[in-house]
Image 1 (cartoon, one colour):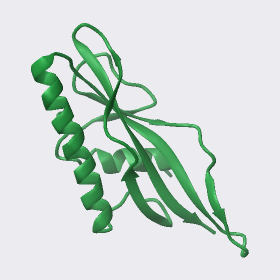
Image 2 (image 1 turned 90 degrees about the vertical axis):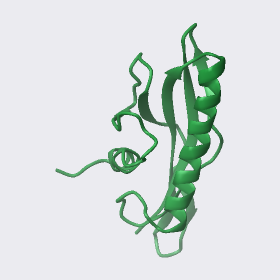
Image 3 (image 1 turned 45 degrees about the vertical axis):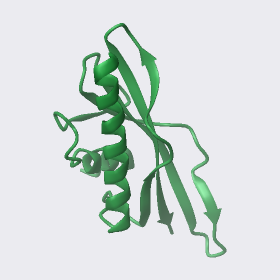
Image 4 (image 1 turned 60 degrees about the vertical axis):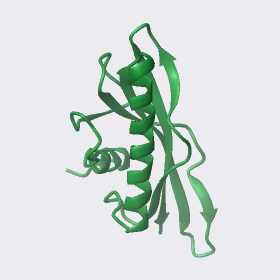
Length: 135
């Protein structure tokens, strides 16, 4: 069975050694700490059209983390976001990328920021992008 591009991205991200349980959901996040999700964000898919009919395309998405929320945990959460973005950058630099045909790169387009909080948890979001070529 063929997988969607977002599934291939999820499979790639699940290899990150900083994930606590390693499982990432698509388009939803569980309401418990150490839950992860990838959520595709609306965007213009075509970055550049080529004269031969091909194109350079993008997939914009958020990597979300449900994490404990208090003064001590917030520092750990910030470190997790730094470690995760560094891991993505290193993987991109060496060409270890999601298994998407024509892929050129993956990147974090921002730092982890808090999307919402409760008294005990927060959802951190790291905006990301994959660039690939399509014939």
